[in-house]
Image 1: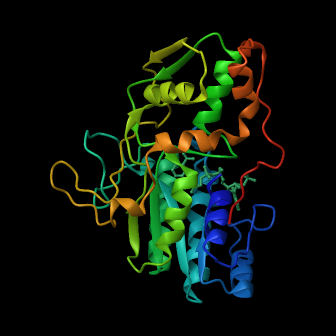
Image 2 (image 1 turned 90 degrees about the vertical axis):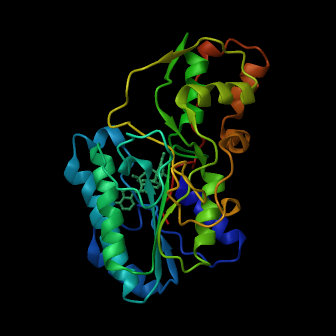
Image 3 (image 1 turned 30 degrees about the vertical axis):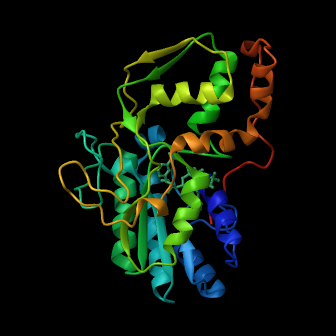
Length: 302
Ligand SMILES: NC(=O)c1ccc[n+]([C@@H]2O[C@H](COP(=O)([O-])OP(=O)(O)OC[C@H]3O[C@@H](n4cnc5c(N)ncnc54)[C@H](OP(=O)(O)O)[C@@H]3O)[C@@H](O)[C@H]2O)c1
């Protein structure tokens, strides 16, 4: 999901691209990574290859670590040799969520889930092996392609009598169409290190779902708030370019360099959900309808 938008954003500002998908390269294979990077000689690599199945990681620590940590190390080692910049997108899952304040970059990570552990390990491998690194922590990504909350909600509203969404977790939904250009802009800077780059505006999953239905113009009022926690799903907001309430300072640049409010991203993210929207606007009985993912919408890594 993010890889596709990162490619588009980089192309729009004139970067020459080498697009590498999972079918072209397994980032766990150090020799293959080395050969590709040495052959292409990039100035920068945006490492969007990741194990992103949060629940699945709980049953496969080695699998998640192999992609998120070893893969990150392989890319950091290979890019350092050139030298080239490496960007490692990461996540608010590296924190335990045990705070009311937004997290800033200097906060101590304490992942509670295997996925969070593997991403923190990937951050450390990236930083250890290539000083020219950006770790771009974001949260609650939604966009075109891949599994994401916006399309899940539209689909559920289409074929379920009732949708239950948890209200006791707050985070910062981030539209990949906003995050990707922000990540590409990082490449113009030399402020290496960790950057928190979540969308402006914190909300609960429940409030996010309400916003999605409203913007979709869907007449779906059977939305219930629940409190069942997700596996490892304790999350909190990431502060970007701002000070936390207690004076802790984010070292990120100004707010304008970072992803916009998630509300602005919901409508553009609907582009592949037109059938669901069309059905709901016509007043059809959406409960009998199912969303079919667009052909060729599989996410890519670059
Ligand atoms: N989604 C979120 O809510 C979220 C939030 C914060 C941060 N992030 C981070 O943002 C980044 C992008 O997330 P995303 O949601 O866009 O991910 P995604 O859609 O799941 O894409 C991940 C890509 O990595 C590929 N991949 C998996 N294993 C690989 C391997 N061994 N070698 C090469 N490629 C491999 C996948 O290919 P296959 O499809 O073939 O497996 C897929 O194309 C990740 O680092 C993620 O941790 C995501």
